[in-house]
Length: 407
Length: 150
Image (cartoon, rainbow over all chains, first blue to last red; front, side, top):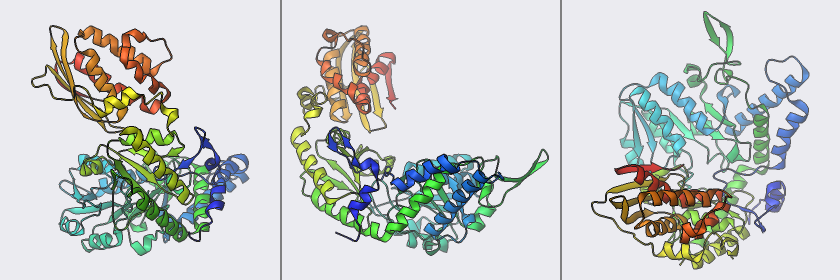
């Protein structure tokens, strides 16, 4: 197939060698969370084994080692996103916390009654609910960009949503339920022509394509470590320095202050102003190792390989009668959402698990997308760089078999 | 290929999934309760006609997986003609059968025994119990209500 040495990559992921219910594991739930290479697992355990101590405040050797590992990871992430400065890289628990931080800090300090926030029909709940909460707090309103049956945003309608009350746009770089990769460069240009800043939810996109926040000129970008072959519970918020400086802190506590007295508190500089409390030190170091792993293979190579997998899988499943692919955007990442006539997605999930195939069945935290297609749920196979055409063949033949059982 | 799953997906379940019993609306039902499992999107409306403490008619509408469809279909069959108290007792037997290792009165649950297999599949227990939680809500509330399991 491509330049990727998939056999070698698979060897880096210890979890993939096991059997599930007696069958080799075929892990196709990568959009929910991806598996971890041994370098990430080692980075975390080595920190705890040899280098662990609290960061930033200690004068002793272990504290210095952990601080170096922690801040070294921040620099890796800066380079990964091509951000201008490490001051723009804030560690959070995940994309969800990143969006909540933007809503509660930037949103709450700048939005008022009748102001408008633009999101889209295909957002994950994490990019809907924080804005709804902000709307309740401020009296602002949500406006929603519609999409076509294929799962592509209607850009004319998007442009028409802007008015003098529009304050913020927040959109998924790539949809977790449909796989659609949105035309974000164009959307950002439109928003900026109205002087409206843009938040990109990069939870799905970051593991699958090169992200250059300066080339995109996005104002905020969030992603999660666990979808990027890194640890769960750690993620990143990128924000343009001027915006982050203008924003009030999200949480108060240690590390985010310069001086505290009962008369008042002076906040620390970026990025620490937004990092109250002892962070997930080993997990940040693990995320740094995941970024090293990804950049070592090359995101362009990964994207090209996953694109081949998606194309192959789409061709194969389209030959199954009664199967309908949900999400057929021209520009799509390696996510295959589908429904099967007469077989509920939950049953598909259980039957596939019995032969070792892990997929996701449900609403994928995108209930408005399910409503749009008038389905209660979909089955979703999502691919990563360690998946193979043989695994897709196994999926397709299992699907054909389970149809026979059900009809 | 799927032989391992025969305990979970018995033929009776496929039968009720293909041809659900009492799949209709009862006009002017004395109870109409909506049950929803937000995790998987299973959604059903249970209709009951209760006259003098006896469930004279039971039906449902909605969509769900094979386990939840078979469960509600079987339930509407078995509760018809039973008193409210008998139906509640059946609910507690069913709950026990699907969630614990304890002994269950197999005679009392009758045909419902085909759903005992879900106990081995914790992620699917809610599919089988949604119908019964909906029934429980219906018996405890006059008129219309809705419940959500999570």
